[in-house]
Every structure is written in C-alpha cells, then in structure tokens.
Image 1 (cartoon, rainbow, N blue to C red):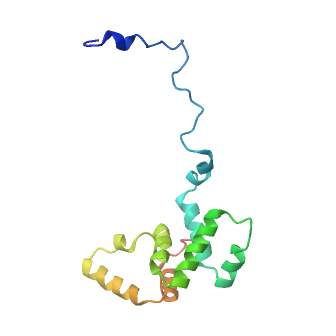
Image 2: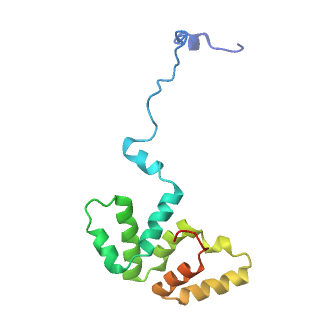
Image 3: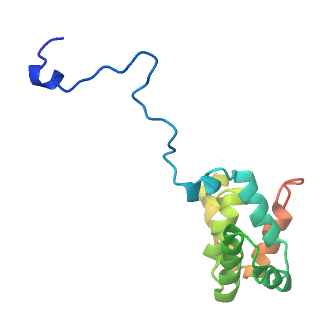
Length: 141
C-alpha cells in the first residue's frame, strides 16, 4: 500500500473468520412503508380502474367503510375532487398511471395540439366516457 498514513491503520480491526462487517438484518425501508413498496403498478392500476367504474353513490358508500385501506381512500378522494372542482388534472393524474401520458402516445405535434384542444373542451364526464371507450380490449378497466 503506497502513501498510507500510519495513524489511519491504528483503528482497523480484522473481522473474525466467517463474520461479516455488515450487521445485516436491518431494512433500509421503514416498517410502515414496506407494504407500499410491495405494491405493483398492476395492483394500483386495478384499484384506480375499480373506482373509475363506480357511480357516485357507490363511491360514497365505499368512502364510509372504516376498513378501506388509505390508498383506496386517497384514490376516491382524487376522483371526488376532480368531479367537485371540474379539475381534469386530478383525473389525468390517475389515468396517467393506468394508460400512460397522452403526450407520450401521440407523435405528431400538430395532432397532439389538436387532441389536447379537443380533450380540454370535454366535460369531466365526457372525458371519463372517452377514456373508457378508447382503452384496449381486455385491459381490465
């Protein structure tokens, strides 16, 4: 070893044979986040799809269920806020996770601008119908 400071080697201790210096057994992910990390994109997509197909009455009934997981409550809340406020960006947030961003699917910039303009003219209900009608067959939505 070249140019090693003699004092830097004083505190080094060899590990016993067969022992690792890595304490192991500890996860870098906090306990409360382990369940979220294990969620797959498909599972989240299925949850979004489940609530996208419900009526307002059905969603209200689900929201009152004290046993509903927080993730599902959050999805319901996003749907509700998008409907109450006419905020298509909240709906877009959920749909982007299911079908991908519209921007990424369109290639021609002129066509993309026309499509954006047409989509912005749609009401929230019309947008939901449009998305449902244009999903690939068998996508589970």
